[in-house]
Image (cartoon, rainbow, N blue to C red; front, side):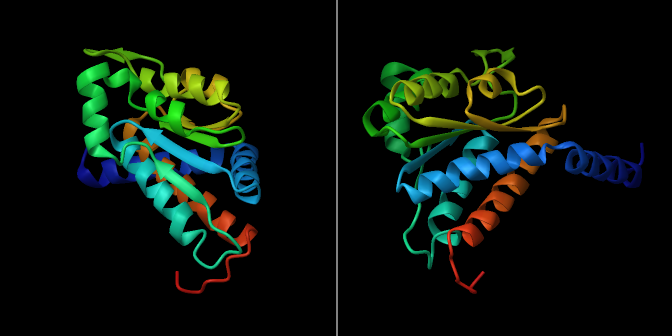
Amino acid sequence: MSTAEFIRSYLDGVETVVEKVSKADIEAVIGVLHEAWKNDRAVYVCGNGGSASTATHFAADLNKYVSDDAPHRFRAFALADNIPLMSALTNDDGWSDVYSYQLESFMKEGDVLVGISVHGGSGSDKAGPWSQNLLKAVKVAKEKGGKVVGLVGFDGGVLRKLADASIVVPADSTPQVEGFHLVLTHLISARLKEAIGNKSKRY
């Protein structure tokens, strides 16, 4: 396959995702986050690998882009951002507890956990089953009376089944899923900005 053919094929895949992704599921996720804002609940976001980066980006957008001139602001936190805490938890307790440990302290009833995962906790590699730390975090969130949002790909995995609202990127490609998760977080942020009455023209 030539480079030109590869580009066309990749972009065709993006078009397919746009056509097939559930608009109703996107609306449901926006609804959960809008409700959290109205009730002044915290939003915690987590993921592994590239999804950890997306989690940080999404939390920043909720706090700044969405909330800048709103009647009141989102309180959004990316759980991978405290590197010393993450490394201490990994060193002492193992990687599987890095998110659940934090939520045991932070999560309150009505708060929202957003879990971002390509495979949704299904599948495995050399270190064992994927994203078990996300699934443990979901368990804690539920026990604390919180709501769970999932951004996933492939078949959605376990996370899709556990979440109160989830969006599955209908693609069997990690780059496609991770890339479209960024599209979704920007779409969600843009709609929330409008919905909560942020009149800022700076963006």
